[in-house]
Amino acid sequence: MSVGVLVFPGTNSEEETLRACWAVGLEAHLVRWNADLDEVRAHAAYVLPGGFAYEDRVRAGAIAAHDRLMTVVREGAAAGKPVLGICNGAQVLLESGLVPQLDGSTRAQAGFAPNAPLGKFRSTHVHVKLVIPPERCAIVASLAPGAVVPAWASHAEGRLAAQPDVLERLEREELVAFVYCDAAGRAVPEAVPNGSALGAAGLINARGNVLALMPHPERDAWTYMHHDATRERARGDASAMLASSGGIALFEGLASAVRA
Amino acid sequence: MIRCVEVLLAIPDNEAWTALATLQRLGIQIAELERGDLYRCDVEDVDAERLVETLSGIESIFNPNKHVLRVREDDGPGPGEVWIDERGTGTTAQRGAVRIAGRTLAGVRALERFTAWRLFAAPNRPAGPEVTQAATETLLCNPAFQEAIV
Image 1 (spheres, rainbow over the protein chains, first blue to last red):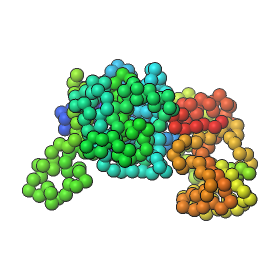
Image 2 (image 1 turned 90 degrees about the vertical axis):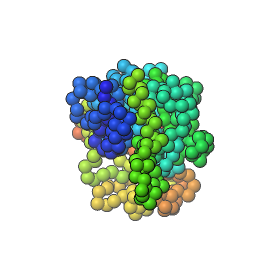
Image 3 (image 1 turned 45 degrees about the vertical axis):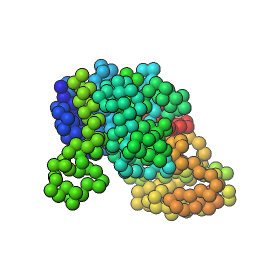
Image 4 (image 1 turned 180 degrees about the vertical axis):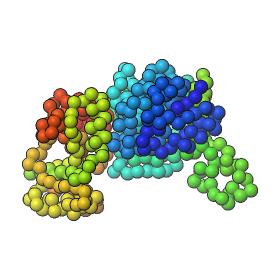
C-alpha cells in the first residue's frame, strides 16, 4: 500500500515529506499535478505537503483546492483513505471543504487567514498538543492522549478563522485535533504564533480520516533539524544527529492509519 | 467624502489569468477577468490629485514601471464587479491616523482595502449578477474570513 505525496506547481516541501514517509517504512511516491488520475487513485493515502501551490494566487490553497488531483483526493477521503495536509496542504484541505465537512458540506466552512497581527510571515519552532481522544482521528490513533509534537510553523496564513457558530461546533464536535502549546504541553496564548482561533494548529474532518495541520512535523523529524543542532554538538556522535525527532510521530501515525 | 483609488497592473496579471482559467474550468461563463487593489478612503479636504500623489509615492503600493493608478468615480462595486475584504487581519480597515507602509496619509480619516475583481461575459461587457455571484462563491471569496461586496 503506497502513499501519494501530491505536488502542485509551487509545492516546495515534497522531498522532506517523502523522506519522512520513507523513514517510517511507508512506500511513498511523488504525484505531480499532471499525473494519470487512475494511477493517483491507486494510492492508499495522500499527503499534501507545504509550499505555495499555484503561488497562493487568489488565496493560499484556493486554486489547488480546485485542481484535478483534488477530485481523486475527495473520492479517497469519502472512501475512508487517510489524508494528511501540512501547512499549504492544510490550507488546500480547508479551501476544498474537505475539512471540517460539517453536515457533509463540500464548501469551505473555515479557512487559514493571514496571521494576526498584520498578516506577517512567521517561521518559528512550535509545539502542538493533541487535544482530542486519539481514536477520534485515524492518523493520530497511535499517539498517546495529550501527546506533544514539535514542529516548525512557517507561514503567513495560519490563523484559523470561521464564523462563530462554526468555531463553536469545531470545538464541541472534537474537530480541533491540535492546539499550539509550550514545550511542557501548556496551551498558553503566547504559544500561538499567528492569532489562530481556539489556538488551533490542526483540524480534522467529521469522519476523522483527514487531518489539516499548519506547522511542519517533517521539519522536526530528525535531530539535526533542531535549531540548536551544531557541528560541534555532532562531532564524534553523528548518529545522534540522525536520530528521529518528535515530528516523526505524525508520520508513524500516518503509517499506522495506512496499515489499519 | 469617499474617494476610491484603484491600483491595476499594466503588465499581464498572472493571478487574474489563473483565476480566470480556474473559473472557466469550473464552468463559470466568463471571458475576461481583471483584478485591482482598491483603497476606499474617507478624506477630509484632500482633493483627488493630492490623494493620487500621496499613494503613488508609496513604493509598496505603486510601482510606475508596472502599475496604473486611478481615482474611481464611484465608491462601490460596478456591474460585474466584486470587492473582497479580509476581515479581522488589522490590515484592511483603519481609522484615525491612517498609515500605509509606515507613512501617515494626511487628510485621510479612514481607509479600507479591498481586492476588486471585474468579470466580463465578453470584451467590454460586464458579467451578470448570477455569474458574478457564482464566481464569488466558487473561488473568489472564502466566507470564513472574507466578505464579498457586490
